[in-house]
Image (cartoon, rainbow, N blue to C red; front, side, top):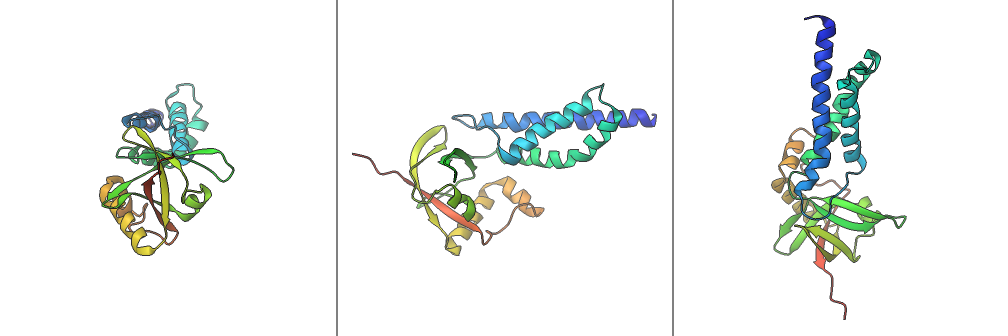
Length: 202
């Protein structure tokens, strides 16, 4: 096989793989009941980036001078795309909040259950930016949306327990922790939030 054919075959294989990952980023969210959660941030970058680079690599008219840079960038896009897909394979909830500018924000979160309620973990910066502590916000879980009032906990024992429960529940968290992409233990910047039901309004 000539060098030209080898490079063409490699680009084609990688290209179709990227296209599949890019489609998966958007399709995997249909696994969850309720309103469709549009990918954002790094997830959106992974999905659109994989589709764009994949399209360049499989398009016959793509110049070779573009093919090799696309191949070189593909591992980065592939990482974001695979993580975006795998993080949605298990239970994920949506928290409908507002950001610091007052704009609507949908937070996609892993959730765990304890005897005292439902818990999530996140960075303190994100929790403060979205004014979550004590707010009345909507939580989408199992296809049902209900009002909750997050209560923020910063004490290390609680934060560590909630984080450990997430690692125990989610296989993606365990796999990512095994290769150093996700912390095995909660960082000092992490907090935990318990979702209490909103009191009835008379």
